[in-house]
Amino acid sequence: MTAFGSIEDAYGAVKVSEESVGVTSYSAHGDGKTFVNSSMPWKPHQDWFVFVENQNRVWFFDGESKLRMHQHIVFSETKSTGAWYTDQNLPCPIPQPVMDRLPEPARLKINRRLSSEMLKP
Image (cartoon, rainbow, N blue to C red; front, top):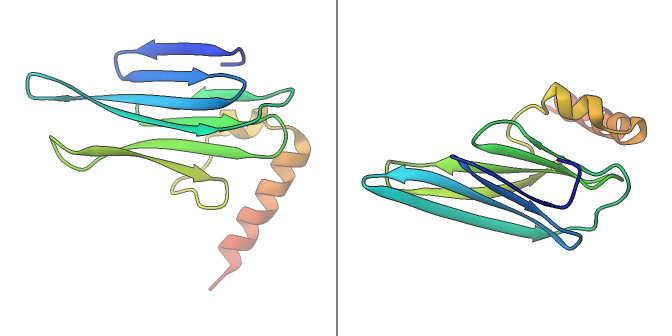
């Protein structure tokens, strides 16, 4: 996604504007759906993008230096939540399509930080 607006499928919706990004995750529980709505302010720059990895993870790059990921976390059949992560506290690897799309300065910065994290005892 590289244009302001929203996309929606059976699992949820992603909305991107000039002021904020938002995710709505749908979870089927019993006879209906529950919704997890989560949004955060952001300031997009040239080359921003959004990458929907799967029904649980959406990646947001502001076009400059900030990479964030939203994860829909299901605890049980009736309980779920959403969590935001920065590239400094990710619970999972960055998908290759996201890394490939990052501008070189941002990619190098993230790679250096991830390498130093792996060296910590």
